[in-house]
Amino acid sequence: MKSVKWDQILETLTKHYMPFTLLSEERLAEVSSVLRFIQLREGEIFQMRGGVSHDYLYVVEGCLELTHSGVVRTLHGSKDTSKRPYILPHAPESCTILARDNSILCHADRDLLDELISWDEMVHFTEDYDTTLHDQLEFIRNSLVFRRMPLFAVEEAFKRMKHKSVKAGKEVVRQGEAGDSFYVIVTGTAEAFQTGLYDDSPKKVAELSMGDTFGSDALISGKARDETVRMTQDGTLLVLGKDDFGELIGKELVKTIPSKVARTMLDHDYGLIDVRYAEEYDEMHIPGSILIPLYELRDRIGELDKAKKYVIYCHSGNRSAIAAMLLAQNSIEALSMEGGIRDWEFEIETVGPSLESACEV
Image 1 (cartoon, rainbow, N blue to C red):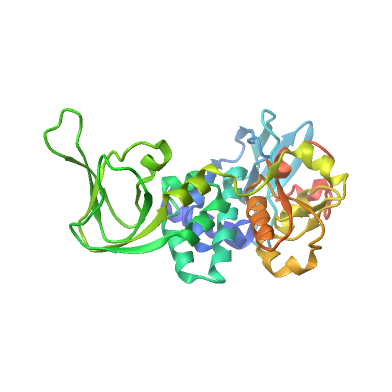
Image 2: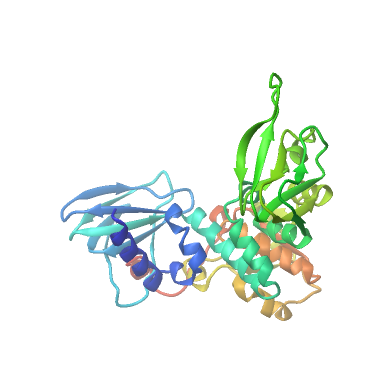
């Protein structure tokens, strides 16, 4: 699809469709990774199946008929008012789509979308007390090491990092030495060299710049460093010590529980908090849950009873883990429910419009 058309579609999504209306500019720049667009001509028939998390379907333009389990719904694209997405059936079930007009559909991977929402909320928290930390979190967004870490651990890692200024020509780490730290390049550039078993001299294997990381392999494996990294420009590094790295990577900071255990705890006076958006809560929620969206939690902690214990859930577990960490920092015992409402096998309630009208886009 041409970039101009993509820009128009993205503009429509961000103006009219939840949760795109709530995402930051940084997350919107990444949103293409969670979306799939389908263009249908009038009269075309298309078979569609959602993922394991009841993915979202948006009708950006046109009109179509969607058939699932013998029920036919007419879905319209509109720019007149904010719209809710249609929730696709859980795989392996599928639905049949008939285009009544030339149409553009948007299929959103709900798990990946939930990850973007969670990251947005975490970065939002850092804005309140540390602008530098907020900027650093943004520029390492795609770092492989941090992508592998639980979101709730990333913020804690950055709090513990120290800044280090390094001159051009300085060797930061040397091959064969024991690993004692993990590094993120904030400014400047560097080169990585390795000497192979049969090499007479080191060979350059990588050029590193802002946002790149090094030093993790030795900390994770427990073996000696397998490369030498030398600065090629004056720069600034963020440094995380070995013990902190091991704790944050290898030790779970937040207590999590499976949904079956959570249900038992709810029968024993645990409170239940839903930290998703209000629109998600309206789609479906667990009976008895209190809605406190994650972005409001810091300001509403005073509403909670510190003598009470809580189970927290979201869509898939990302936001609830951040919430559990935040409550723990405020001396409130909280457990994050694994898999969120996505994996909840018990009672579900819906509020607001009827199923028929809620499914119309």
